[in-house]
Length: 317
Image (cartoon, rainbow, N blue to C red; front, side, top):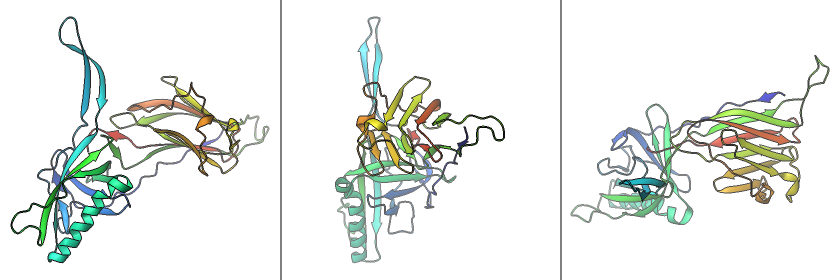
C-alpha cells in the first residue's frame, strides 16, 4: 500500500540578543504572555531586560524521593515524583522620564500577573544555533520595586518568582510523524497488486528528550476505527467511531486524541472519549530514545491520514 510521509515542520525562533545566564550559559530569553505578545528579556537596549545575576531555577527538575528502610541497613528507593519548580527572575525596567518608566513598569507587571487569570505564559530560551526550549510559567510574587532612594523615578528592578506546574522544558520545535494513504491502483495494472481498506503505519518514533512525552494524534477520515500500539510494551488503545454519536469518520472529517490529559474530540468539538476501548485502553507515552509503534485505520480510503505530534521534554533549559 502506498504510504506518503511528510517532513517535520520547524518553526522559526525569533532572534533576541543573547546574554550569559547562570546555570545555562549564553542564551536569548523571551517571555510570551497569555495573549501571545512577546517580551524580549535579553535586549540591553530595551526598556526592560533580565538581570542575569540572581537568576535561578533553570537547572534540573526538583524531585521527591520515597524510600523504604532496608533490613540490611540503609534504604531502597520506592518512588520518584517530579515536583513543580520555581524560577527566580530579576528584571530591570527603565524609561526616559518618570511617566515613560511608569507606563513600562505597569505594562510588564500586567504581562506577568495576567497569567493568574488567563492561563500560563511561556519563558523561552533560544541558543545561538537556533534551537530553543520553553516552559509554562505563572506569576507567584515579587513585582515590587526596591524602595530605595532614586529608584521608582526613571528605573527600578523587581525579583519575580515564577511557578511552573510542569517542571520540564519543552522543545519549541514540534516533532511530527505523518502517514497517509496513496491513490489506489488497479489490481492487474501494471501487475497483480493488493490494496487494503486500512492504513497501516509501522514506524520508529524517536524521542530526543530526557523524559517521556505524551503525544497527540490527529486523524483525518474516512475511517471507522482507529488503533495505536506501542510494540515494545504491547500497550494500545482503539477509538471505534461507529459506537460514538458521531458515527464513522467521513472524508475530510478529523479527530484529535490527546494522551495527557486523556481526551478525544472531533473537528467540531464533539466528545468522543466514550468510543475508546475502556478499560483495556492505555493512552501510552513515548520514552526517551527509539520506540516502535503501529497505527491502523479501518475503513480508510485515499486521503485518510494519521499525524502524531509531540514536543521533546528536557530536564534543563
